[in-house]
Length: 205
Image 1 (cartoon, one colour):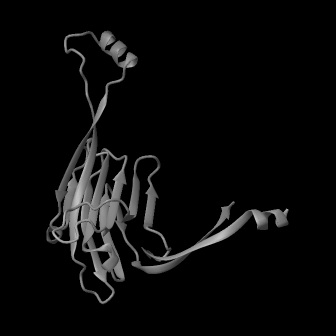
Image 2: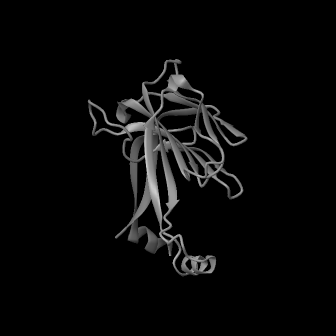
Image 3: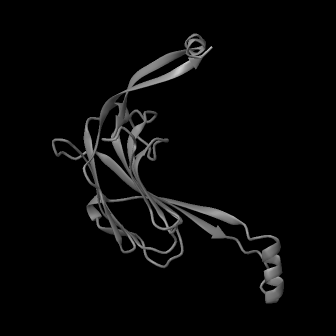
């Protein structure tokens, strides 16, 4: 069996560099609050969130705090900063995006309760997504991004995106301090640096 495997496959290795945390990944923290909401903190690997005058097509290092599936709790940002290892601040743009699910009720107002329930059970009201985006003045922290009890913003994303392109990044640390309802989240020794990776996978012929 091993003889057949050796001649039917070949191990191909890819060596490269990636900008990653102490665990070699881009996710630093995940929290699940008993089905109420999720917290995710880590690198955003998709497109840039902002526009730039120079090298706009180049990917930036973007760090995101994402709060999902929460409609009631207040969200307060106390601190959010990226620093190089020598303590100097990284030039960063800060922003917030919210996504709110809005139920569209198109039924007439002058119908009975029974008829209303019948319509609802037959065809649940459609939902649209309301998307908002705004910048944060980091010097104005702490700020409340959402008051409690609003019943809005099913997802809140707080971004910190470096002005320097990703390929120019040096070792840096990430620090955040935010609150969701009564619970507070403070980062612990998050460090990103260039790391060599080795990816070996069998290639079948």
